[in-house]
Image (cartoon, rainbow, N blue to C red; front, side, top):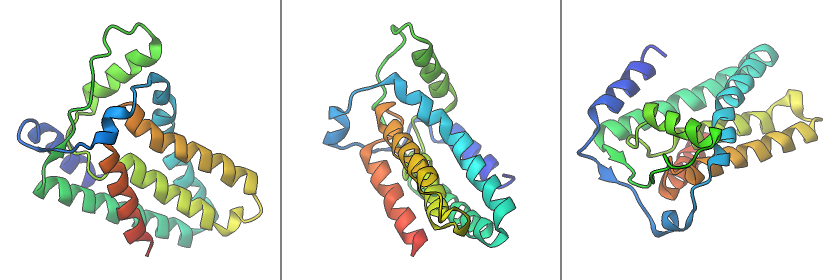
Length: 182
């Protein structure tokens, strides 16, 4: 947190105008849906819960998951530092008068449209789901693994349905997760 946090905050404050815009035609076909703010925010609980479980269940599995996440997040920071990137997908939703759309407006105030490739939401979700699927402590808990798998899919979908990420960011996160897994 003492390295990642300040580095990410520096990127968020300094990469504001001159960046490569990430976009593909599929992005234009995905509608905005404020309901996805729920799984998007559940991501924070999901990652924390997985890491807490692994910490208490198996130090080895905890260290493996930590290495996966930390190395991947460091690669993300390096990519965003040498190749500033962002999206221009976000549409104005201020006219919507729902609590969920207000949450999205709040999210957008703190999470800029820059530093998006690869998606950390997707990468960390994949890392946590892989850790749960491989955890020896959950080998006989298929219902729990199915539930977290569904949550993981919803979290990943939330990144594009909230227009926080391009489909390219999602593909990049899958690619990075594959490399980290190998």
